Length: 259
Image 1 (tube, helix red, strand yellow):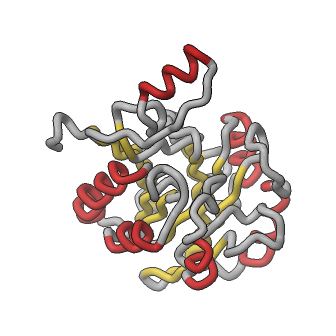
Image 2 (spheres, rainbow, N blue to C red):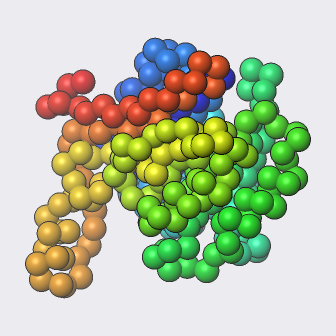
């Protein structure tokens, strides 16, 4: 099986990057299964049916999310009805939607778990380490692969989680910070890990948002309205071939409106 994990997709520019590049990347790498973090799909915050459909139609199998999952109320019926959309599993038990799912592809069963870190996040969450344990105990003998999107702010928490699940999860890929790290590797017991896969969205931006307002926020300390940037994109992802053991970071820049 060959997997592609795509980082936080930001607004219209990020969706354009996915629709432009994903079909050719899937063909080039012979990708079997695609997981994409989509919590910023709809104008930089949240998910609605239109953008969900748009991304799925580009060839995405599962969409994970994070702290912006519920920013658009239109997401609620999708969470209720479509198993391809996940929200963090360690949200309070009464939260809408599901935090993990089992998907079948090419005769293999793949468990995808969406978890969120607690450091600097600022919303009530159960322990992601213990939540993984609970899910793992239920499914460890029922699936062929386990993929975890760990959506977190602190690199230390992400790395600690990676080592905690090493040898149990197939892949742990970090999301949320929007900046790709260059530490893709096999952990000692065989889990594929990267601290943060990076964002897919506007290149000339501050983590996806228009830079002028962000700069003014830092200079003046006054509130600003953040808007997704436009222009050329960056596409960030991680590829893993479970048969050959190849791990590869993918980072593609759009140059002056052309690939």
